[in-house]
Length: 448
Image (cartoon, rainbow, N blue to C red; front, side):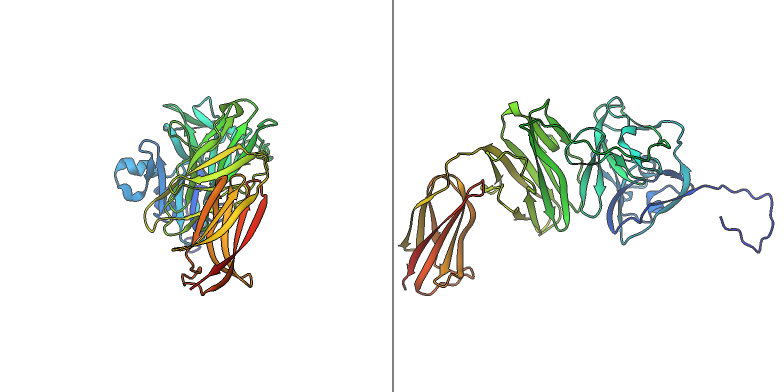
């Protein structure tokens, strides 16, 4: 509080004093998922509190976001009004501090807040690091995990105090928003106040999948945004492990599995007895005209005796995923892009990879390259000049089945021009799912 020195001593002046709460660090440029650890004094409209109307809050009743542009009626104003426990997506134009004068949530009693069925966008109600163990889940109809948002990458991060896979942490930071899912009507968010002895947070616990179990992270990226929270796998210990996928937000990418009932999952770890070797998933983004990539950063947990294949169900293209850097496609020029893919993990044949019966024959349309491979593999066929320089890539990383396969070169270079007559070399390179690589080089003559 500042007192004007010109006033001097004064009595009989009524005023209200309240602490001022400031974000621990400035909200970054772009999108953040946040909450405010106090009830603001005065105007509690989020546009006033955050200094921007580029914000929204998730409504479980309509399964969609509500923003200040939705209307100025009493119901909308009340839903959006800032209070402890409410979470928001806020977009800042440049890095900014946010300061709010207000009344903090009580720290001598359990914090209670009604939730809607399914996903709820809530927030840490206290101005202190909140252990997830303080959220009284399960008994209150709330699933025992949640997701926070990482602003720099646009991904969600898993938060729980239970054993899991890719658990980012076991606590929620001050001013941080949190996705929680309620499974029943009249569920209540119940949070125990942060105690003075809770400075040390528990370390994340790794879920025991058993000796024969494995987990495989799938990562989707586009235009600097990423989804790093998706996991497929098999457990040989106990029941399956599934985690629901939280709602996405504009300007990012989402990768989720689809189960038998059409539910969206972030984690789909099945029992070994289930026997289904395929995981169908969707990659979705509203970022237009950009390269979208899907990768498997670490396949080391998957036993070497299993073949990992990625199939684009929309194009029928299959790639051996154990050796691929990534699978790429381009998003639409406008609107939402959804690509449907399948991850298959199956036993492989033990026979070695061999290319045989390779030949090059002239045809009316160019040169036909015929070859046989001893087992399914990924094949690249390239044409080189006699000095070994690349002239044309006939096919790249194309899946070939065991047996005879055929490719046709149209006698054009990669620039689209017809090549001159002369001698060339045709290189057929095959790569097995386990990384075995074989090559066959064939002479070819182009006659004009």
